[in-house]
Length: 300
Image 1 (cartoon, rainbow, N blue to C red):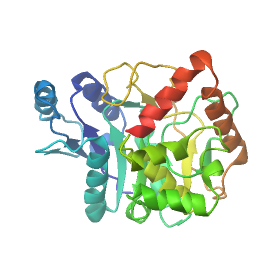
Image 2 (spheres, one colour):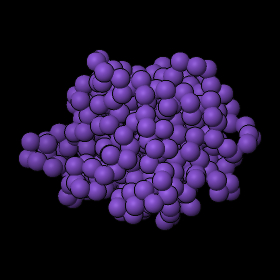
Image 3 (cartoon, rainbow, N blue to C red):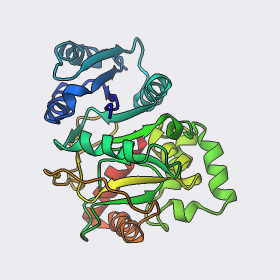
């Protein structure tokens, strides 16, 4: 098995970027993997020094088979940077693992991603492999499928990314015409449809809600681990698109998660737990903060 290239998207957060890369190097497949880093240019003069500090650090990164740094000469914004970067690599590599600069991964993250890519490469019902799992209360199978696609540490093939529809209006119209908006919102538990509407009118530039919708409308499935292999460290107020919140924190799996053959169908128990979690985050009071974090993550 040839490990998939790892794509890392960075901006101006040196500490987060350093933590993400250091966590990656603790994976035994890191030394056999190519790391391609897309460094976005500063949006404002205030950010320029921070971006340059990140870029200086990126020149020192080692511990991988090869490290390439692509420095954007203008500010793409996270969504456009990811869309352009993933599209570029898919044209040559045919598969990729995608991370952002505020994700901390388990030492077994790369094994899970690559095992999943190899196991389901030729199964056209599977669109992606995902590393983060919500902190649900019920024990789930070691791996399971959910309809759609997700955005916190994921991997796909060229055939999967080919289904990505950039035009949010096309996606929204199809959801409405097929009467799928309630299901798209996890039975009304979370406002993904509204987020897609907001993307269309420019209130956000979310690539993630379009990725989810693209997969959902094709009835494609994503493989998840029962215990998360990704920790989102961006809820500390340092991000352009996220504020303060730690209520989606998870404990990283510190053991290998086996990717074994299973029926490629949605696991209804897992879907129900995801729905409960989304509904819980929509409750009033302190739980509102969780909902806000989910929205800001997807809006990126």
